[in-house]
Image (cartoon, rainbow, N blue to C red; front, side):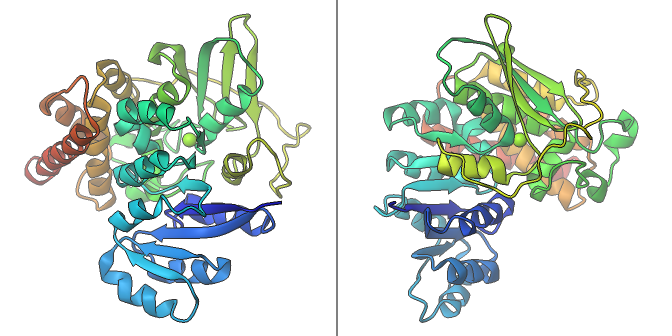
Length: 386
Ligand code: MG
């Protein structure tokens, strides 16, 4: 069997390391062609040596010498800077690109990978949240080969296999995060370590904070809109604290398909890499005899205003989700540095969305400019007002 060449953008992060774990179990199926990291030079070097990567990119150019020295004599080519990541997307030996960079910075390389006609295992949700209007058209023109890695969208994608009938409703499940049962007032003043303490999923810091105020679920609603061509009002968010059902699809006959599994990101990662096959994976199996109950409840939209902010942004459309995303990145960063309170994250997002110019039909360049403008506005808010 011919091996598939894999590029992992963001290989030292949570999704990246788990993708390499999957690959390490199927060395007969995959070759690591390219690994890229933002800052973590030592882990990037270690990974490149272990997987005999063809090439690596360290995005922080100041660390080029460290990586170059670390891989001296290994045969791995070393590049630096985000521009190199984009350039290398056209490497012939790459079949699948795991887009697992954090935040808006994942947009440019993902666009390059789509244009190069690669299969995209998409973990970077900000790409679709901010760039949706442009990305969806671009993907359609280039073979529409995006397979979602986000557990909810992977679940929906799996539920749709073999179906050809219209979807009546998508039901996105949410764990509810660490503050599901915390009073609103207490949540507004939560500490960084409380917000990082997710009850179900082990993830990177950015997405964990996004999960704590449910902005993440708002992002995922927008991601689902673009991936499955669904009107936002046909996407329902439901809290399911056990995180056993990863999402559901309801059809026009009233039947509902659900995908279940232990909360282990390696399942959707491997599914995106191996689709349509399902190789063996050593994940924990659900023991239905021990599963006492599965519960569901409507999210508290007063306590979690991020959900309504996201619906508002996608209804406005154009660059509004991009503005929301940019403000969120700045606000989450400020919260992690303890510059603002937890409850102020959504306040900053709301203020930025009200201030930055709305463009109903943005180009890709407009998206980059809107991101810059919104980030600048939000940074200024953090510095002057909070
Ligand atoms: Mg998710």
